[in-house]
Length: 95
Image (cartoon, rainbow, N blue to C red; front, side, top):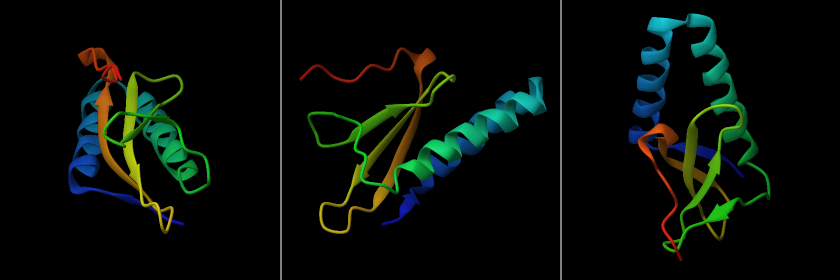
């Protein structure tokens, strides 16, 4: 199993890092490490909350960010699709 990142998710991660880095480089590094650690855990069998369209989501513990990803049913590989800051009032759609 593997974890892949879409270009969009990669750009969002970089954007989140750069914005926080302007205020606090240490906080930006910690946040990026937390995102990386959680994304790495997607390489296991764990599957988090599932949306109606089949996309999964998991909050980054301690940070106002949600990782949206999909899992290939055959290979079980995870692809990070998007990073959504929860301060944008992101909520999973009602089932």
